[in-house]
Image (cartoon, rainbow, N blue to C red; front, side):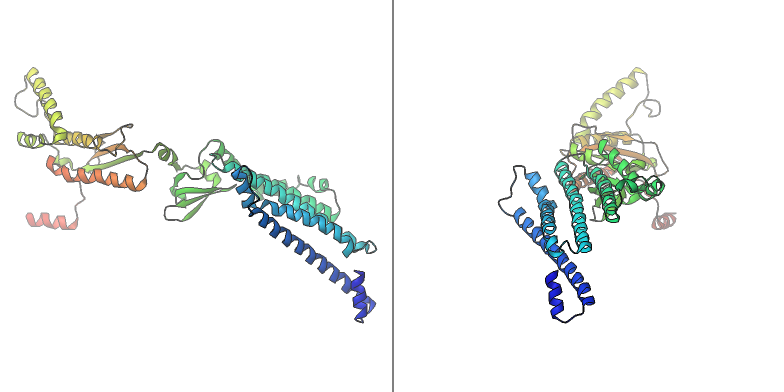
Length: 413
């Protein structure tokens, strides 16, 4: 600083302006020097991280340290020590006020470095832990960071104003209600994130569906307050973490782990087309390989029953085959013979309660893959066949009549 004053005096400035200008120039040079050391330490640390000499035994720790650029923070600390050493050169002790300010700046800088190091350490631990783990700790780490940063900056503020940190901490009770309002989402998010993690409700990579939020895709991130879902159309949906435990959602990850996906779809039969099978239709249906044995066994059973109960040739008094019954058995036999239908799970066709659209005939089975494209192809293959063959049984699919159908009916009449 003395050299700067000599230079300003040489330029012919008055004593009043010399003192002020030299102080301003010295502070600017000191700040510029700090920035230079800061920038240089960052570049050197990045260069070291990317060099072939930096390689720990654990690849996970190596990747985490590189990803967070951890050693750059260590470089910042080294820059602080250098700045503390040279502050005496910039601000000699005879300039008490400026020397005090410089020391305070360096000390605040050290405190900021400590906070930054703690944050980096927590981030490294989180990355290493979450790699390949089902229970992420990102939400918990974020809460710790908020807690540490809050009290860290409180200590820095207390140091700047010259008060003890306990002076401000004791006042927190007065503003506790305000803090509860400000950090309401954070507290709810922490509680929700903890429950989600402990109960293993959802993890990164899971396929979840939450229609009320428009979410249908893979979870890509779980933070303290938010769950990020990437939909199949590449749209990113954000869901408050608390909504996952206060509402309901579907998690398809178990299906993907098992490697099987359920088919549960109905076709609606026009009930006016349901009837007993006559001899002509029975003769035609006996040619179906999937029904041949069933019809033979069932005919023997029916003949034995009708003979035992002295039933005459009357369909309404005895037991006889129906087209809907044979069609149900045919569909059931068909899905069980498909190679892509899993043999480890239930596979059947059943009737549901009749509705105004007709009689629902439901196909219930599981494919042996959870792949979406293959699943849709297999499901379409089954119903392509069912809809194509249903006419052979004298059955019709229910369809709401259109205006063209009404015209055709009127013209026929």
